[in-house]
Amino acid sequence: MITVRFINAEGESQEAQGVDGQSLLDLAQAVGQPLEGTCEGQMACSTCHVIMDKDWFDKLPPAVEDEEDMLDLATGARRTSRLSCQITLTPALDGLIVHVPAESRNMQGL
Image 1 (cartoon, rainbow, N blue to C red):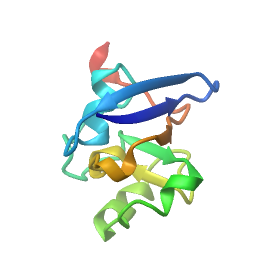
Image 2 (cartoon, one colour):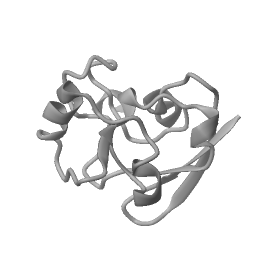
Image 3 (cartoon, helix red, strand yellow):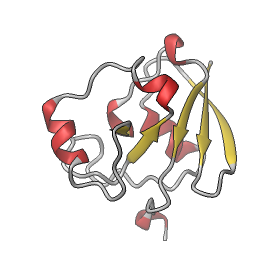
């Protein structure tokens, strides 16, 4: 199991257990985080935007150009922003810390 800690804008933390090969978006949705993922991982939206903890950001594979383009459209994007649909969990990411922006809303759940 791979442990991921999600931290919301209020500083509340939720720990979740994922598996090797699972996308960060799938795990986030499975535990009720407000990440929509409208395009289902096709990098055609930025509704799964998260901010990676600075200590973990450089440990991730770099974003491809299409992801960078979508991040340019994300509300509240920062230097350590990523699309959660593009992060695949691996044992090397055990303990990953992810910040969910205040702007995140899952409209599909309404």
